[in-house]
Image: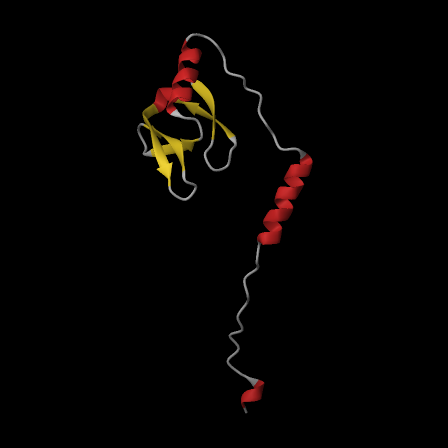
Length: 109
């Protein structure tokens, strides 16, 4: 069963298949000083951190099992937001300084 959750850190919606989940528990993020929920999947040591707490995930799972479908309206950034994000990424980018490995220095002799 697929449910829509919010990816921790990026705040983007993501689909999670709870049928493949091995364990679900809350963890504390020391850098942001808040809780997130870690969902570990069986088989191949993969996991995802989401914003929703355990009670919300259990409620969504129960509603899905009862046949109530979750709102799947995706929030997509507008073209202006995408341009602004791209501008900010390029603005923060610093090119590497190239080193000169020329062994012959004209000023040396």
